[in-house]
Figure 1 (cartoon, rainbow, N blue to C red):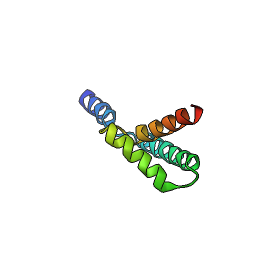
Figure 2: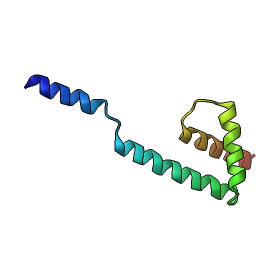
Figure 3: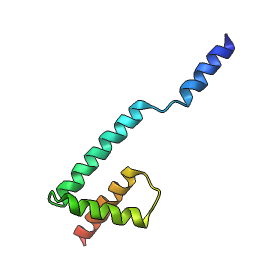
Length: 79
């Protein structure tokens, strides 16, 4: 019985958390909409900004790119 309990523990430990994926998707959509509002609804501009950041910082998480673009945009607007 101990083996069974231990196996179940490790099995669930390494399963991807679906709630985390849902939360990440929701956060991504929220950031995407925020960026779209910032660029006046011009998705082409948003895509170019994201592409520039992806080129400069390859291999990051998709949410990181949106956060970076939004952060850079705000800094530029404050200057």
